Image (cartoon, rainbow, N blue to C red; front, side, top):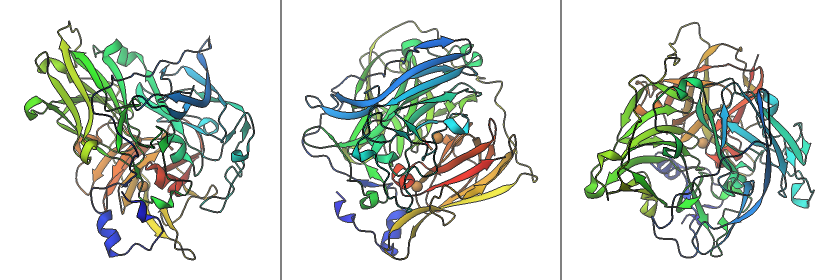
Length: 507
Ligand code: C2O
Ligand code: CU
Ligand code: CU
């Protein structure tokens, strides 16, 4: 384990060589025994129920609070959860129908809720300084000095106890997620459980004969580390001890360690989300005897692809979603199919297992054409080009490491780009390390990766893209929805908290 990597140092040649490797963070080892893989059933987060449905809107009450849950068999973990659970409840919303989350903060720390992938008005987007302070004030809720010398919350739209996030959802059916976004503390607060699914449906998708009901399952992949008593382990406040990012040594799917799911020999739709802080996945389905299974990708971050795409491996960077269909009729009854992460190490090479237990009727299909409304963007020389360089910087006086964009750590005042509402721009992301780049509000299509055509996993509308060491990714970004201040940032949550964020202003 990498606990010795504590003090910030200038990154010399030795440091750079590890930056170019496959590793995207440092392992924080658990204490105490870890469970055997595939011993617990896969949980599926419950659906949230509105407290009120009005014409055109569904209103939900959400309480952020501590909960005691059993993640490791026989031990209890205190989570900070939406409604006290981890993952939080799944919201099932509809395109164009307003969803209102009335969030009450019954934790002891400020929070910020962000709908990742949402086309959301700026005042509800979960800007990192728009704090929701605890309903009961307590000492840990005080503003404190941050990495960039600003009191967290300065200049933000603060609320005490309760606030409403309003999501009009002028966007296609897609798999979104919501999570904490508090300035400098996103990583520790998401680690403790503040994350959940938010699904948007629409008529176009309803028409498709895709697997549905209990054969449409969201899978939240994330890694965590635990202490002997079952509590989550995370580096104490100073993330500087883990500048690259924190990797857990327990693989969770929907909050359960290396779970198993009994399936019928039919098609299933899985909405894969990489909710890890720093871990990348290269997923592969492995039947007994090592035979590879197949994923048919039907959607990306921003909803349905124009047409399905088969994959034998799928790369997921933090924040990305892949909507896939797996057909278990390809495997005999009784088979066990393991979802593996070939980018992982040791036990982290296993993710979960499917056990094909019965035959069943299957009326589902994957149509050759998924979305007629999918619009492929093409570049034009009239499009503004902007460059965003994601890089580690060591600051002067104390040799403190920062993750920066265009050489600058995050400042609430600096605006790096001012795109026009309704326009498409050509954005270039370059990097020195693995940086999953995420843009709020706007969705984009990958145009090129490393000067070549996009990778297989880059297809469709996206809001997050994996930018690998010394690589340039070009994207066509469309600014739809609202004017106002939004942000782009690295979705490695430790990098994000260490200032790798920037503002853009839609005008
Ligand atoms: Cu999923 Cu700004 O984040
Ligand atoms: Cu986001
Ligand atoms: Cu990063």
